[in-house]
Image 1 (cartoon, protein in one colour):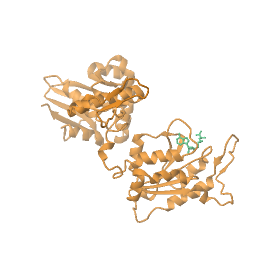
Image 2 (tube, rainbow, N blue to C red):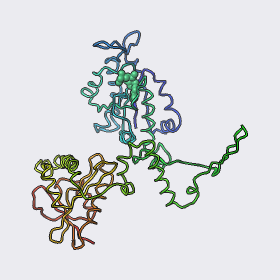
Image 3 (tube, helix red, strand yellow):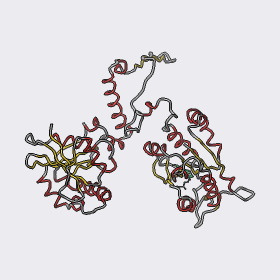
Image 4 (cartoon, rainbow, N blue to C red):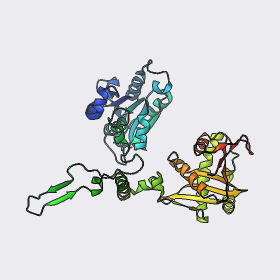
Length: 410
Ligand SMILES: C[S@@+](CC[C@H](N)C(=O)[O-])C[C@H]1O[C@@H](n2cnc3c(N)ncnc32)[C@H](O)[C@@H]1O
């Protein structure tokens, strides 16, 4: 991975020569280049800032040195490295308190990029035309990214934090890749408490008070891996609830274990408003994928949805008080018809669809001998889920633009 950082304080980035990141650089896993913004000025004082148009306090970083610095970074593309457009240009990250929050998910996304460039602002920030130049003239993808809801003096500290979080996810940088799996934020929960030897630690206060013995929780010494895993998971939930309750809304619905706490039940009139919203959100994606807006769920109204709840067994999945999924079923001539399987778009890819499918199959009446589903002919993702669950596609479908899938009940 190539990293370019532009700053008026290149020395600020010196810690990136230390520890695991430094080792990764020496091993050639990370190719880091730090550029002095002042090298791209043309006046005697190497001026990088000026007063803001429209008045106001502070100074603004000038467009000219920034544009030249970015032109220089982009010109470093190695023509032999690859011919793809992605590698020929860096993705530009501009740290800023007004940016999208930097998260573990973003670190993971950025760790997959072959080339990142960082522009460290100072003063009141960078002239807006620098962003326009990067996007429009250099063809860069530009993301403004915030370390948190507070204001730093400059982007360098943010870049240090981001590069460390990103680089440790680059394959080979951390020797034991397994240590990355169970960390805080990897699946929306915080990490469990950790302990090392000795199992009993004694503190003898100098003021004559009684000594205190602090023990490692006995379950960790039990050798029973099942119990240890359960204890750790419980600790993660408790710790997250205590320190970051905001995370539990989504993380409660992440894995099958979390779902045990989630509320899966028959839809009631009180669910219909949110169900209509979820239906529109989910089928808008389907409409885009299938290049058609003639999809019935997209045209559902409050009234038609309320009527359908009388005709189908409609189930809703709630986690952290929020409607995160739904599915429905009805028996017709001994076949359990499954429909409207939906997962909130921000929670896709976490196994919720598979879970809902298993649940609705299990709710089929005893006399049902098989299952039946309809999905968009171009809905690759849905079709993959159903194929994996053992469904096979019928040679033809009643409605053009759809496919019908069936599975025998075991
Ligand atoms: C004093 S700040 C400028 C703040 C700017 N006037 C505003 O209100 O958005 C100077 C520089 O520090 C960096 N910075 C400050 N807070 C940051 C944060 N929370 N995350 C990332 N970068 C930050 C950015 O590079 C910013 O351009």
